[in-house]
Length: 191
Length: 191
Image (cartoon, rainbow over all chains, first blue to last red; front, top):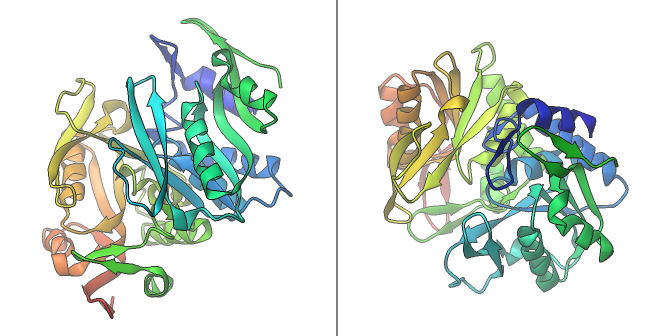
């Protein structure tokens, strides 16, 4: 998505530790018209796929999941993060290790919000090491729901998680894939 | 908003401790078309008010803030919650006491996302005791930005925070005000 690549170049900043900060339009602050454009693009990519639910994880994925849900006219659901593994029985859970915070947390979705007959699209702002998406995939497996695909705004191609998922036959759509970045340049994969 | 009252009656559940659970359409799971309807209604209420930014707090307020931002065509921003008071200098912060979790947490917004010239609409899913909205108001004061009003999907009228804000001259719009609730009935204020 050309407009996203241009926005990353115009507003993104690169911080130490391969952090690409796009808080001005994609997560902490949401450029509403632009978020809706991304949501519409995701809906276009999955047209005809009969998605019944969008799944993400709090907090930074919520805005995009909401926009995708609006564009697809299906409910969006977010997994909550918890520090403790002590969860009620009526939720599906998975453990996720966060490289950013150097800790393992639990993600949980109430069982009533993911059904066996669901055709689910996972949506998130970033695909980096893939830990969060793997947690969401385990929740879908536990629920017996079908994963139709994973849509991300930005994939950090150099971390390899997207290509690994693709090699496993999982549909992954990233609207911008950053294959390398330095203080001075961001290189996007030609898609 | 009649449709919201009907949805609360149809899908809401009342849990011990005056908890009104509407996770099936308003927060953990978002009924996309309905969330967008609420966003459009908020935009209609604030038409002509020249809102420049929508502000909320993670996580349950994000969906509605995104929908309101899309409807108003202005950016939405969410304050992050932190346990520690140890914050970088480039953020505005406020302490908020959570009755639900019986603990005080810090909320923070990067200074770059709230400007002195902003006309801000605070949006949240619930107004209960008002602690979160007061935290957001302190952040706006610190930033020198103007608070135009506060829009909530559901106000727990019996907790009094909404009327207290109104008596202070603050514009508060709640699309449904629950004045009392028991296991068997929910009473809405006539607006």
